[in-house]
Length: 433
Figure 1: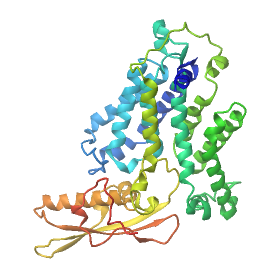
Figure 2: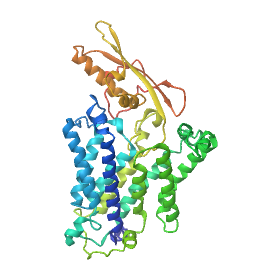
Figure 3: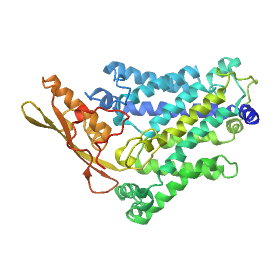
Figure 4: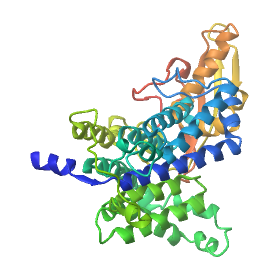
């Protein structure tokens, strides 16, 4: 253990950490500007009257409209500060907190890469990411560091490596391996593209893409760690993320991964490429006396979270218990249809409530095939009737869903009063299996 600790504490060039911070911050600034320019602040956080909070975070609510716009302005300014390395730690922490706050408001907008953004932002706040290539290092040479401990680089490599590895492990399922789904469905939807479009109509193309994606996810991080295979692995990163970004229009996430995987390069690569001189060497003093232990505990949690689905019965792609925060990337094409049936047990009077009566079209579409969101929507219906003076109504759901091209089937037990269930981490026995 002593030898390992010494290797982890050995100094390496700080340039790659500074470059990652600058590139990540620039991507986040572009992302915030793009988000605002497309009117998504209003459509996602101002217009809706109901939201789907995460378990334990029901207190996270959208701010009034002017404050919500101000929050995004702060988020964008802190992303720019992170890119420039201005008050680096404060900029990183401000961005991490504001971004995570926004993401906690509504499950409707959950994406794996938003979760990754939060994690990377908090890591950059904790690590000496402003040691070089920063305004901080320029204005105050005492803050500059020519080197950082090896473990700081491997911390980020491990985080990104787990994203790829667990995405690959999750693809070892019958739909991906034996049916080439959901890629086959998605590629057919893009068959109108010039040149490549006609190829997407063939089943063999979907299988080729599926198995190529599986091999890429399982082995790309390992290949990036080795000097000889690194150029080929990074070329695969650029090709893979460039192609998925073009085909599936998933925003800036492909470019975020392309710039973040530069952390697998030799730590001195920015200094050699940009030909700038290293600052005077200062020793970075972490706040923790055992930073490697803190880092190891963090990575252990990240390694265990994707396996929590084993605590629940049923197929995780169907029940979605343990689905989030586990890097199950591009695994489901799921659609659903749900109506809520309300009955007053005192008078036996009945009502049918459609989700569009209280949700936006996006919220209704995202909620329909997801059990934990359906039970939250049922709670919204119950609360609405309580406000009308009917506090004891029974709320059930007629919910059907289709997973990866299969015929739709019942998703929720229609006899269960969902209005009394509530959302929690407990197994949801009322999910039809």
